[in-house]
Each structure stands twice: as structure tokens, then as C-alpha cells.
Length: 167
Image (cartoon, rainbow, N blue to C red):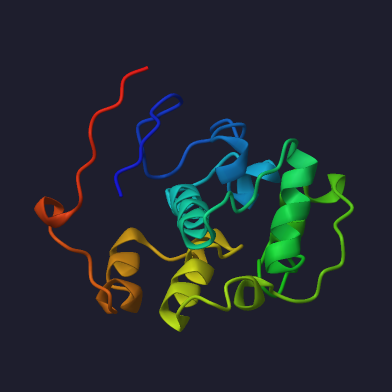
């Protein structure tokens, strides 16, 4: 699934340098960005992939917030409220104290995606992990069981074709 938006693209560097956290379309914005992190990694892109994957699994937007506050609430409703145990150093993020987070103690991924395979739920949870260093990498995601289970993808030439429609 090639997906790209290079609108605010930056050259990736090590060590990471501070960048603006107000990037990425809101529905796909990683929680570290919502909480004001300025030194972030490609893990923000994996979060976005998780949001797209969730949309594909449920045939509708996964986290369709209209404001940053609502986006945070939607993430908490899906994954539970972030804590230091699951997201070390969360409380030190620039905007962590700015939000009064709802106390959601459970992770709703299993319930919301109960009709999907265990492999699909496992990959989704790995992509939508709060703690950026713990979030799955591209390489690991491509090795996920989800991509080896049936039905397998077919060759593009075997896909149905449809007439071109012009408005």
C-alpha cells in the first residue's frame, strides 16, 4: 500500500533535531505529536500506517477527530489512557499536563475488531502502540503473520477491472 504526503517532509537525521509537532493530517497523527513532542522518529509514520490499516479493517475512518482534543479522546477510547507503565516518560511530554485525559483502563482493539483474525489484531496493536520506541518497525511489520495468512493477495493482473469514469 504505497501512501505518501510529502507536504512537510524533512531530511531524516541522527541525532534527531527538534521539528514542529503540528504535522500529519489529524486523523493519522501519532500521539507523541498530539502531546507536543518535537524530537520524533519514523515511528510517527508507522502510527499513520496503523490508522490506515484500521480503516481498511473496519471500512471507515478509525480515529476521525475534528480537533486535537477530540483526537486524543478517540485514541484513549481505543487504546486506553496512556500511563508511565505503557509509555515511559509520557508525563514529561510538553502537552501531557495540558489535557485532562479520560480514565479508560482497557484496550478496545480486541472488541472493536473481534471479527478480524488474531494476526490482523496483533499487527494493528503493534502499529498503534503508544510508546514510539516500542512501536513496530517497517521491517518487522512486513514480517507480520497477517501477510502470510489466507486469503493471500493475488497478482495485480488477476484483479477485476472497471471502466474508466470521467466526471
